[in-house]
Image (tube, rainbow, N blue to C red; front, side, top):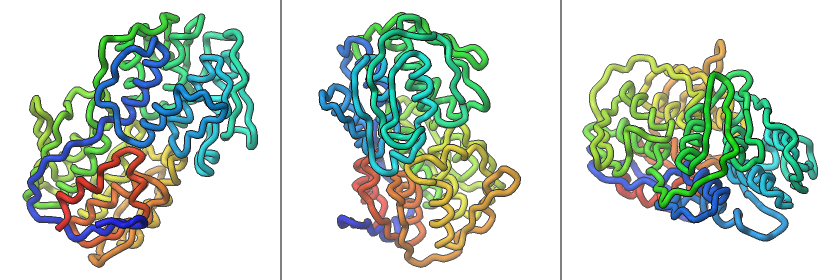
Length: 406
């Protein structure tokens, strides 16, 4: 099925009946690691994600080395920059060439406002950075643009209870990825923080953190999206995903509602969720992905495969992810005869996959490109380059895919 450079997926089984144990949520895990460390570090974190980003965070947070290499992990770079800054720990923060092209100026500006001495080592606004100390808090009120990356906001929120005067954060402009901000606040509250979110201002009191006896991480709803897509492309299929909850900290749980429109019924039980392929009308699909950008690639590929007109908004942050995800989607969908284009502020697919021959998918060093396109193996053979990229969030994805392919 795999070699070091590519994975070959032969056309998948019909009427798939299987159980898939998803990885733990990377988003929850990474936040819990930071908040636990900002407390007394005593809380056992159960079911932490095995994703490379989470394991990297674990390995770096207590590392005494002067230089911290976050590789291509955005949350690791942003969260650890705020963490080390708040603790007054001098560090050089760097990463891969792509990471050093991903903007971090909004976070650096916020840290400077509260009194952190932090400098760019090369290009202004981008890593690498040098954190030189934090002597005294200069202000307890800052503004952060809400439409760039919620990770900047979450990074500042998590350190706020440990600041002498707490912190009031006013979010300016359109606020994206609201569920990720709410996830951060909910985890902070679990660890004893006192926070209040009214309109566009979040007030965090200087309470510090009180560590709970234990904290368990949910399975990953983002990872579930690929199994929804597989189910949607396989008539008669039933897939059980243990541990997923209807009431979740994760905003990507909205995929269950999305997939109602795309041919997948979701049944919640106390053990998890069951996905079932059902007949449906192919009405045009419209969605604002502002609060769930990680689902956009999965939905775009699925709509193209099912011949469903798709109108997507809220994709602005996709330009600054592991790759330019919009350009990557356009390139790879074009190989199949599908077209993704912008019109009137919307991203539209109304030319669909027509070629049913074997295709090679480039992943652009982006885990979600690999996994978003993998479900097309339910229709025909695929080759996916750089399969190891899935280690970033779903290390055993290809092992799970063996349940699908012939």
